[in-house]
Length: 359
Image (cartoon, rainbow, N blue to C red; front, side, top):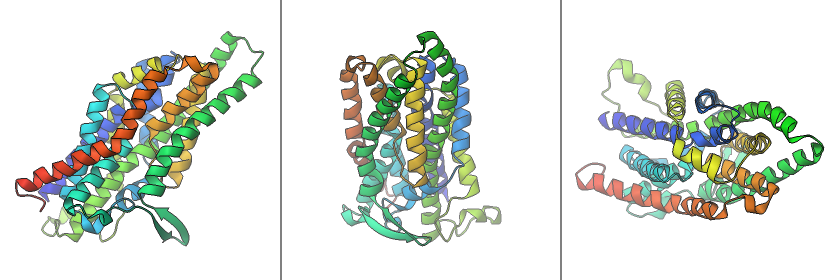
Protein backbone atom coordinates (compact mmCIF):
# COMPACT_ATOMS: atom_id res chain seq x y z
CA UNK A 1 0.00 0.00 0.00
CA UNK A 2 2.83 2.40 0.86
CA UNK A 3 4.47 2.00 -2.53
CA UNK A 4 1.17 2.78 -4.26
CA UNK A 5 0.82 6.02 -2.30
CA UNK A 6 4.35 6.96 -3.39
CA UNK A 7 3.49 6.11 -7.02
CA UNK A 8 0.30 8.17 -6.75
CA UNK A 9 2.20 11.16 -5.37
CA UNK A 10 4.95 10.97 -8.01
CA UNK A 11 2.37 10.49 -10.80
CA UNK A 12 0.53 13.63 -9.73
CA UNK A 13 3.84 15.50 -9.52
CA UNK A 14 4.51 14.43 -13.12
CA UNK A 15 1.02 15.58 -14.11
CA UNK A 16 1.54 18.95 -12.43
CA UNK A 17 4.89 19.40 -14.19
CA UNK A 18 3.24 18.34 -17.43
CA UNK A 19 0.73 21.15 -16.90
CA UNK A 20 3.28 23.94 -16.57
CA UNK A 21 5.80 22.32 -18.94
CA UNK A 22 3.22 22.08 -21.72
CA UNK A 23 1.21 25.19 -20.84
CA UNK A 24 2.93 26.86 -23.77
CA UNK A 25 1.25 24.41 -26.14
CA UNK A 26 -2.10 26.06 -25.57
CA UNK A 27 -1.25 29.66 -24.79
CA UNK A 28 2.10 30.68 -26.28
CA UNK A 29 0.65 32.03 -29.51
CA UNK A 30 -2.31 33.82 -27.94
CA UNK A 31 0.07 35.53 -25.47
CA UNK A 32 2.69 36.45 -28.08
CA UNK A 33 0.06 38.04 -30.34
CA UNK A 34 -1.25 40.02 -27.31
CA UNK A 35 -4.81 38.82 -27.89
CA UNK A 36 -4.94 37.78 -24.22
CA UNK A 37 -2.86 38.76 -21.23
CA UNK A 38 -0.75 35.98 -19.69
CA UNK A 39 -3.16 35.73 -16.75
CA UNK A 40 -6.24 35.46 -19.02
CA UNK A 41 -4.52 32.90 -21.25
CA UNK A 42 -3.51 30.71 -18.31
CA UNK A 43 -7.06 30.70 -16.92
CA UNK A 44 -8.37 29.72 -20.37
CA UNK A 45 -5.76 26.97 -20.76
CA UNK A 46 -6.36 25.56 -17.28
CA UNK A 47 -10.13 25.41 -17.85
CA UNK A 48 -9.64 23.79 -21.27
CA UNK A 49 -7.25 21.18 -19.88
CA UNK A 50 -9.75 20.32 -17.15
CA UNK A 51 -12.56 19.83 -19.66
CA UNK A 52 -10.44 17.90 -22.15
CA UNK A 53 -9.26 15.45 -19.49
CA UNK A 54 -12.76 13.97 -19.30
CA UNK A 55 -13.27 13.54 -23.05
CA UNK A 56 -12.50 9.86 -23.53
CA UNK A 57 -10.01 7.28 -22.24
CA UNK A 58 -8.50 5.85 -25.43
CA UNK A 59 -5.11 7.48 -24.87
CA UNK A 60 -5.04 6.35 -21.22
CA UNK A 61 -5.61 2.74 -22.25
CA UNK A 62 -2.88 2.92 -24.88
CA UNK A 63 -0.33 4.20 -22.36
CA UNK A 64 -1.38 1.74 -19.65
CA UNK A 65 -1.56 -1.42 -21.75
CA UNK A 66 -0.13 -0.71 -25.19
CA UNK A 67 3.63 -0.32 -24.67
CA UNK A 68 4.84 -2.76 -22.00
CA UNK A 69 3.57 -6.15 -20.88
CA UNK A 70 1.61 -5.31 -17.73
CA UNK A 71 2.18 -8.76 -16.22
CA UNK A 72 5.95 -8.25 -16.27
CA UNK A 73 6.20 -5.07 -14.21
CA UNK A 74 5.67 -3.92 -10.64
CA UNK A 75 4.69 -0.64 -9.01
CA UNK A 76 8.39 0.06 -8.56
CA UNK A 77 8.71 -0.16 -12.34
CA UNK A 78 5.98 2.44 -12.72
CA UNK A 79 7.65 4.64 -10.11
CA UNK A 80 11.03 4.53 -11.88
CA UNK A 81 9.38 5.31 -15.22
CA UNK A 82 7.66 8.37 -13.77
CA UNK A 83 10.93 9.62 -12.28
CA UNK A 84 12.59 9.27 -15.68
CA UNK A 85 9.89 11.45 -17.24
CA UNK A 86 10.05 14.04 -14.46
CA UNK A 87 13.85 14.43 -14.70
CA UNK A 88 13.74 15.03 -18.47
CA UNK A 89 10.80 17.44 -18.23
CA UNK A 90 12.60 19.54 -15.63
CA UNK A 91 15.83 19.60 -17.66
CA UNK A 92 14.08 20.72 -20.86
CA UNK A 93 11.86 23.19 -19.00
CA UNK A 94 14.92 24.78 -17.42
CA UNK A 95 16.49 25.11 -20.86
CA UNK A 96 13.27 26.50 -22.34
CA UNK A 97 13.12 23.61 -24.83
CA UNK A 98 9.60 22.46 -25.79
CA UNK A 99 10.02 18.67 -25.60
CA UNK A 100 7.39 15.94 -25.34
CA UNK A 101 6.06 14.99 -21.90
CA UNK A 102 4.30 12.05 -23.57
CA UNK A 103 7.46 10.55 -24.96
CA UNK A 104 9.29 11.27 -21.71
CA UNK A 105 6.72 9.24 -19.80
CA UNK A 106 6.71 6.31 -22.23
CA UNK A 107 10.51 6.31 -22.52
CA UNK A 108 10.91 6.23 -18.74
CA UNK A 109 8.41 3.38 -18.43
CA UNK A 110 10.12 1.33 -21.16
CA UNK A 111 13.56 1.81 -19.60
CA UNK A 112 12.27 0.75 -16.19
CA UNK A 113 10.51 -2.27 -17.71
CA UNK A 114 13.79 -3.37 -19.31
CA UNK A 115 15.55 -3.06 -15.95
CA UNK A 116 12.80 -5.05 -14.23
CA UNK A 117 13.03 -7.84 -16.82
CA UNK A 118 16.85 -7.85 -16.84
CA UNK A 119 16.99 -6.56 -20.42
CA UNK A 120 14.37 -8.96 -21.77
CA UNK A 121 13.29 -6.92 -24.80
CA UNK A 122 10.13 -8.97 -25.27
CA UNK A 123 8.64 -7.05 -22.31
CA UNK A 124 8.22 -4.14 -24.72
CA UNK A 125 5.26 -4.33 -27.09
CA UNK A 126 6.55 -3.39 -30.54
CA UNK A 127 3.62 -4.14 -32.84
CA UNK A 128 0.58 -6.27 -32.06
CA UNK A 129 -2.86 -6.73 -33.59
CA UNK A 130 -5.69 -6.88 -31.05
CA UNK A 131 -9.47 -7.01 -31.28
CA UNK A 132 -11.47 -4.53 -29.22
CA UNK A 133 -15.27 -4.42 -29.25
CA UNK A 134 -15.33 -6.23 -32.58
CA UNK A 135 -12.75 -3.89 -34.14
CA UNK A 136 -9.18 -4.73 -35.06
CA UNK A 137 -6.55 -2.34 -33.69
CA UNK A 138 -2.78 -2.08 -33.77
CA UNK A 139 -0.98 -1.47 -30.48
CA UNK A 140 2.67 -1.10 -29.59
CA UNK A 141 5.56 1.31 -29.81
CA UNK A 142 5.72 1.34 -33.61
CA UNK A 143 2.08 2.12 -34.55
CA UNK A 144 1.14 4.20 -31.49
CA UNK A 145 4.35 6.11 -30.74
CA UNK A 146 7.27 5.98 -33.16
CA UNK A 147 5.38 6.23 -36.45
CA UNK A 148 3.15 9.08 -35.18
CA UNK A 149 6.28 10.75 -33.74
CA UNK A 150 7.68 10.96 -37.29
CA UNK A 151 4.44 11.70 -39.14
CA UNK A 152 2.79 14.20 -36.78
CA UNK A 153 5.45 16.94 -37.09
CA UNK A 154 5.30 16.60 -40.88
CA UNK A 155 1.51 16.81 -40.77
CA UNK A 156 1.63 19.81 -38.42
CA UNK A 157 4.03 21.69 -40.69
CA UNK A 158 2.20 20.93 -43.95
CA UNK A 159 -1.35 21.43 -42.66
CA UNK A 160 -0.36 24.59 -40.80
CA UNK A 161 1.16 25.98 -44.00
CA UNK A 162 -1.91 25.02 -46.04
CA UNK A 163 -4.32 26.58 -43.54
CA UNK A 164 -2.28 29.78 -43.57
CA UNK A 165 -2.15 29.75 -47.38
CA UNK A 166 -5.93 29.29 -47.59
CA UNK A 167 -6.55 32.17 -45.20
CA UNK A 168 -4.15 34.36 -47.17
CA UNK A 169 -5.97 33.64 -50.44
CA UNK A 170 -9.45 34.20 -48.97
CA UNK A 171 -8.51 37.46 -47.25
CA UNK A 172 -5.99 38.71 -49.81
CA UNK A 173 -7.72 42.10 -50.10
CA UNK A 174 -8.37 42.63 -46.40
CA UNK A 175 -6.47 45.39 -44.62
CA UNK A 176 -3.99 44.06 -42.03
CA UNK A 177 -5.65 46.02 -39.22
CA UNK A 178 -9.07 44.53 -39.98
CA UNK A 179 -7.59 41.05 -40.43
CA UNK A 180 -5.87 41.19 -37.05
CA UNK A 181 -9.02 42.45 -35.36
CA UNK A 182 -11.14 39.59 -36.76
CA UNK A 183 -8.60 36.90 -36.08
CA UNK A 184 -7.81 38.32 -32.67
CA UNK A 185 -11.32 37.31 -31.65
CA UNK A 186 -11.14 33.99 -33.48
CA UNK A 187 -7.85 33.19 -31.83
CA UNK A 188 -9.55 33.05 -28.44
CA UNK A 189 -11.69 30.22 -29.86
CA UNK A 190 -8.70 28.41 -31.37
CA UNK A 191 -6.70 28.76 -28.13
CA UNK A 192 -9.62 27.29 -26.18
CA UNK A 193 -9.81 24.41 -28.66
CA UNK A 194 -6.08 23.82 -28.29
CA UNK A 195 -6.39 23.78 -24.49
CA UNK A 196 -9.20 21.20 -24.62
CA UNK A 197 -7.25 19.05 -27.11
CA UNK A 198 -4.20 19.24 -24.85
CA UNK A 199 -6.28 18.00 -21.93
CA UNK A 200 -7.57 15.12 -24.07
CA UNK A 201 -4.07 14.12 -25.08
CA UNK A 202 -1.93 14.77 -22.02
CA UNK A 203 -4.06 14.34 -18.90
CA UNK A 204 -5.04 10.85 -20.04
CA UNK A 205 -1.44 9.63 -20.08
CA UNK A 206 -1.05 9.73 -16.32
CA UNK A 207 -4.56 8.26 -15.98
CA UNK A 208 -3.22 5.26 -17.87
CA UNK A 209 -0.14 5.03 -15.63
CA UNK A 210 -2.25 5.13 -12.45
CA UNK A 211 -4.66 2.54 -13.84
CA UNK A 212 -1.65 0.35 -14.61
CA UNK A 213 -0.37 0.79 -11.04
CA UNK A 214 -3.79 -0.11 -9.58
CA UNK A 215 -4.10 -3.19 -11.79
CA UNK A 216 -0.53 -4.31 -11.05
CA UNK A 217 -0.97 -3.72 -7.33
CA UNK A 218 -4.19 -5.74 -7.26
CA UNK A 219 -2.62 -8.65 -9.12
CA UNK A 220 0.38 -8.66 -6.78
CA UNK A 221 -1.67 -8.43 -3.60
CA UNK A 222 -0.63 -4.92 -2.57
CA UNK A 223 -4.20 -4.05 -1.53
CA UNK A 224 -5.14 -7.29 0.23
CA UNK A 225 -5.01 -5.78 3.70
CA UNK A 226 -6.45 -2.33 3.03
CA UNK A 227 -9.36 -1.15 5.22
CA UNK A 228 -12.88 -1.42 3.83
CA UNK A 229 -13.04 2.25 2.84
CA UNK A 230 -10.09 1.70 0.47
CA UNK A 231 -11.59 -1.33 -1.25
CA UNK A 232 -12.09 0.81 -4.37
CA UNK A 233 -8.34 0.55 -5.05
CA UNK A 234 -8.69 -3.09 -6.02
CA UNK A 235 -9.48 -3.70 -9.67
CA UNK A 236 -9.66 -7.14 -11.38
CA UNK A 237 -9.30 -5.51 -14.79
CA UNK A 238 -7.58 -2.54 -16.38
CA UNK A 239 -9.97 0.43 -16.22
CA UNK A 240 -9.86 4.17 -15.64
CA UNK A 241 -11.61 4.88 -12.33
CA UNK A 242 -13.59 8.09 -11.90
CA UNK A 243 -11.41 9.27 -9.02
CA UNK A 244 -8.31 8.81 -11.20
CA UNK A 245 -9.87 11.04 -13.88
CA UNK A 246 -10.65 13.77 -11.36
CA UNK A 247 -7.22 13.60 -9.74
CA UNK A 248 -5.40 13.90 -13.08
CA UNK A 249 -7.73 16.53 -14.51
CA UNK A 250 -7.46 18.83 -11.50
CA UNK A 251 -3.70 18.36 -11.23
CA UNK A 252 -2.90 19.17 -14.86
CA UNK A 253 -5.20 22.20 -14.65
CA UNK A 254 -3.36 23.37 -11.53
CA UNK A 255 -0.02 22.83 -13.25
CA UNK A 256 -1.14 24.83 -16.27
CA UNK A 257 -2.21 27.64 -13.95
CA UNK A 258 1.35 27.60 -12.61
CA UNK A 259 2.58 28.94 -15.94
CA UNK A 260 5.66 27.80 -17.78
CA UNK A 261 7.14 31.03 -19.01
CA UNK A 262 10.48 29.70 -20.20
CA UNK A 263 8.85 27.53 -22.88
CA UNK A 264 6.15 30.10 -23.65
CA UNK A 265 8.92 32.57 -24.48
CA UNK A 266 10.60 30.07 -26.82
CA UNK A 267 7.46 29.07 -28.71
CA UNK A 268 5.63 32.38 -28.71
CA UNK A 269 8.48 34.82 -29.29
CA UNK A 270 11.77 33.23 -30.31
CA UNK A 271 10.71 30.71 -32.96
CA UNK A 272 8.80 33.10 -35.25
CA UNK A 273 7.06 36.44 -34.82
CA UNK A 274 3.29 35.88 -35.00
CA UNK A 275 0.21 37.97 -35.69
CA UNK A 276 -3.29 36.87 -34.57
CA UNK A 277 -4.04 35.31 -37.96
CA UNK A 278 -0.92 33.16 -37.69
CA UNK A 279 -1.78 32.15 -34.12
CA UNK A 280 -5.27 31.13 -35.21
CA UNK A 281 -3.93 29.01 -38.08
CA UNK A 282 -1.35 27.24 -35.90
CA UNK A 283 -3.69 26.56 -32.98
CA UNK A 284 -6.55 25.36 -35.17
CA UNK A 285 -4.23 22.98 -37.01
CA UNK A 286 -2.78 21.51 -33.81
CA UNK A 287 -6.14 21.21 -32.05
CA UNK A 288 -7.72 19.29 -34.95
CA UNK A 289 -4.77 16.88 -35.25
CA UNK A 290 -4.73 16.20 -31.49
CA UNK A 291 -8.48 15.68 -31.24
CA UNK A 292 -8.40 13.24 -34.17
CA UNK A 293 -5.47 11.17 -32.90
CA UNK A 294 -6.75 11.13 -29.28
CA UNK A 295 -9.96 9.52 -30.53
CA UNK A 296 -7.87 6.60 -31.81
CA UNK A 297 -5.80 6.29 -28.65
CA UNK A 298 -2.57 7.68 -30.09
CA UNK A 299 -0.61 9.49 -27.33
CA UNK A 300 0.62 12.16 -29.69
CA UNK A 301 3.04 14.82 -28.52
CA UNK A 302 1.17 18.12 -28.23
CA UNK A 303 4.56 19.84 -28.27
CA UNK A 304 5.56 18.32 -31.61
CA UNK A 305 2.27 19.20 -33.26
CA UNK A 306 1.92 22.82 -32.12
CA UNK A 307 5.63 23.54 -32.66
CA UNK A 308 5.61 22.32 -36.25
CA UNK A 309 2.27 24.01 -36.91
CA UNK A 310 3.88 27.30 -35.86
CA UNK A 311 6.85 26.52 -38.14
CA UNK A 312 4.55 25.80 -41.08
CA UNK A 313 2.54 28.97 -40.55
CA UNK A 314 5.73 31.01 -40.15
CA UNK A 315 7.23 29.54 -43.31
CA UNK A 316 4.26 30.84 -45.29
CA UNK A 317 5.28 34.36 -44.34
CA UNK A 318 8.76 33.62 -45.64
CA UNK A 319 11.19 30.82 -44.91
CA UNK A 320 13.61 33.19 -43.20
CA UNK A 321 10.88 34.18 -40.72
CA UNK A 322 11.50 30.90 -38.87
CA UNK A 323 14.63 30.77 -36.74
CA UNK A 324 15.86 27.42 -38.01
CA UNK A 325 18.84 27.28 -35.66
CA UNK A 326 16.46 27.23 -32.70
CA UNK A 327 14.30 24.68 -34.51
CA UNK A 328 17.35 22.44 -34.81
CA UNK A 329 17.92 22.57 -31.04
CA UNK A 330 14.28 21.70 -30.42
CA UNK A 331 14.41 18.73 -32.79
CA UNK A 332 17.52 17.36 -31.12
CA UNK A 333 15.60 17.38 -27.85
CA UNK A 334 12.79 15.45 -29.56
CA UNK A 335 15.21 12.82 -30.85
CA UNK A 336 16.92 12.42 -27.48
CA UNK A 337 13.75 12.25 -25.35
CA UNK A 338 13.04 8.52 -25.65
CA UNK A 339 16.61 7.21 -25.15
CA UNK A 340 17.38 9.75 -22.42
CA UNK A 341 14.28 8.98 -20.36
CA UNK A 342 14.68 5.24 -20.91
CA UNK A 343 18.23 5.57 -19.55
CA UNK A 344 17.03 7.45 -16.45
CA UNK A 345 14.11 5.05 -15.91
CA UNK A 346 16.43 2.03 -16.22
CA UNK A 347 19.01 3.26 -13.72
CA UNK A 348 16.39 4.63 -11.33
CA UNK A 349 14.93 1.15 -10.97
CA UNK A 350 18.40 -0.33 -10.61
CA UNK A 351 19.07 2.15 -7.80
CA UNK A 352 15.78 1.22 -6.11
CA UNK A 353 16.68 -2.47 -6.36
CA UNK A 354 20.17 -1.80 -5.03
CA UNK A 355 18.70 -0.61 -1.71
CA UNK A 356 16.51 -3.69 -1.40
CA UNK A 357 13.22 -2.79 -3.07
CA UNK A 358 11.51 -3.82 -6.29
CA UNK A 359 13.47 -7.04 -6.86
